[in-house]
Structure formats: structure tokens, C-alpha cells
Image 1: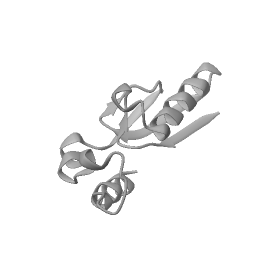
Image 2: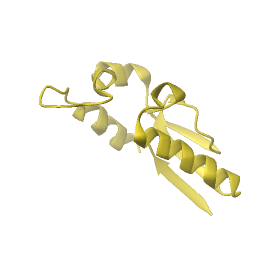
Image 3: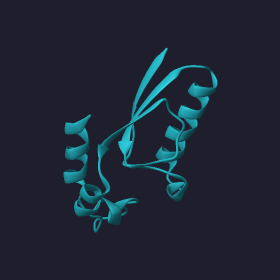
Length: 92
């Protein structure tokens, strides 16, 4: 079976405190362990096991869209990450 997974721009050990990042990495590891084919659509940074890592947003675009500053948005003063999300969705 083939799995196409769209992830956050950061699926790395550096963001291990992010629950979504952990779920993506765990799911990829579990599906690969069961012999499935895994395609991961994410940013340049990736440590999750997959058969093919498709880069949908580069590091420069990610940093320019201020997504690096809002990895864990909390409260009304959080940064707007819409430009990063739009770029990721267009490329997927």
C-alpha cells in the first residue's frame, strides 16, 4: 500500500516537542516497518523514514514567511504563517 503524507515544513529531531511532528515521524516509521511505501511531502529538513521525500517548501521561503518564528503559536500575538501554508499547499 502507498501512503502520501503531507507534513509540516519541519519533520526533524530538532522539533521533537511538536506533537504533530512526532505523529508524522512515528506514522512513517510504523508504515515503513510494515513494508508500505511512504511518500512524505514536507520542507527541506526531514529525519522521518520514507521512500521518497518531496520538498514542498525550501528553507529560505520558510524563514522569509516567518514560520520559523511561529513554530508554536500561542496567544493573540502569534505570527501569521499563512504565506508559508499557502506556498506549501500550492507545491503539494
